[in-house]
Amino acid sequence: MSAILVVNSGSSSFKYQLIDMDTEQMLATGLIERIGEESGRSVHTIPWDAVPSVDRSDAPQTTERTLPIPDHAAGFRVMLDAFESHGPSLARHPLLAVGHRVVHGGKRFFEATLVNNLVKINIEELAELAPLHNPANLQGIEAAQKAFPDVPHVAVFDTAFHATLEPAAYSYAIDDKLAKKHRLRKYGFHGTSHKFVSEEAAAFLGRPLEELKQIVLHLGNGASASAIDGGRSVETSMGLTPLEGLVMGTRSGDIDPAVLIHLHRRTGMGFDDLDVLLNRKSGLLGMSGAGDMRDVLERAANGDEKATAAFDVYTHRLKGYIGNYMAQLGRVDVISFTAGVGENAAAVRKAALSGLGAFGIRLSDERNEERSRDARLISADDSDVAVLVIPTNEELEIARQTLALL
Image (cartoon, rainbow, N blue to C red; front, side):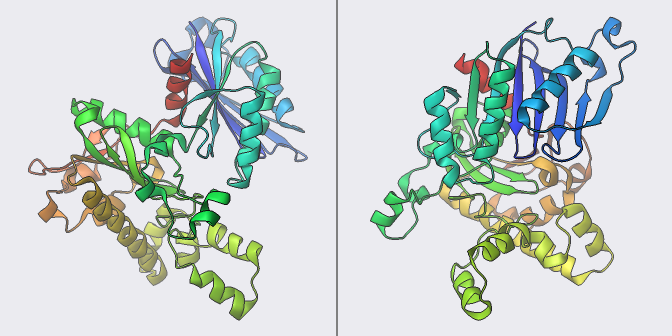
C-alpha cells in the first residue's frame, strides 16, 4: 500500500499524519513539539485498526517521549524513529509524496503546487503577509526534504480555495496604487477546510456540488465563514490576515480601524502592542477572560455576565455573516458547521440560526443536541435549508490534493 505523509509545521512544533491513499485511512498521527527548548516532546499514535495484529502485539496505541529536539530536522528524525520502532512501517507503506500545509499563498498560488526552489523563495517572500506562519511552514518543508529527499513534496495553501473571489469581494476601499503596491486585499484562510466541508456536504446530501449554494462556518479557536457557489468560494470573512471577520478565541475579528488610532493617541500603544492586543488578548478571552468556548459556556451557565456578553457578541457577529452571505448567494441550500466549536457547541449553532425561520432555516432541537463524531443533519424536517455538522479533515484534504497533483 502507498501512503502520503501530511505535515503541518509551526515555529516550535509540527503535526503529521500518515494516510493510506487506497482507503483514505489514517495509519498514524503524531506531534513533535517544544522544538528548540531544553526538553522536547514526541507523541505518536496508531489507530488499532490501522496496524495488523502481528505488528501491534507489543506496541502501545500512543507512545510519548521527552528528549531534546534542537530543530525541525531533529524532529523529523524523532518522527522516523517512532515509525521504525512502533509502526506502521514506512517500508510497507512507501510514501508517494509529502503534503505540506502552507498558510499564505498570496495571488501566486491558487492550487496545490510541487515544491521547488522558486516555490520556496515565494513562500519566504510571502512571509511578510503571514509572519507567524509562512516561515514555520518553510522550516517544515526544508526539514522534510532532508528526511525524504527521494519523494515529491507538495505545498497546499490555506488561501488557494479563495482565489476565485471576484474583485468586488476581495478589494479594500483604499487608495488603489497603495493597495496594489503593498498587496493589500482580502485573501481568506481556512480554505482547505472550507473546500473539504463543502464537498463532504454535497456528498452527504447526495447532490451535485455544482448545483449547491453553501455557507460553511469553520468555528475553532480561529474562525471563518465562507459563501460557496457551485464549489467556488465567492466570499469569505478573513482578509489580508486571519484577524478580520468573526469573533475568535483570542482575536477581535472586525473592528473599526479608528479604534487603533484612538488607542495610540490616548495610551501611546505602539504597533507591536496593538498587534498583541488584537491577536492574542481580544475575542472571547478579552471579553470574558476565557478564550475557550467551553469555558465561556460553563461560566455563562453559572451566571457570569461577562461570559454571557461574550457569547452574545460572538453569535451576533456570526448571524450577521450568515445573513450577509445569504444575500450574496441569492439563496442557500445548505449551511455547515465545522471545527471544534462548530462541531461540538450546540448552543452556538442554535443562537446563530435563531429567528431565521422566515428564511427557511429551522433547527431540530433534538438533532442539534445530539453528540456524534459523524457528519449529521441537524435541521428540522420542514426546513428549506439543510443544516449540517460536518467534521473537518484538513489533513485528508491536503493528501487528496497532493495525490491529485501527482
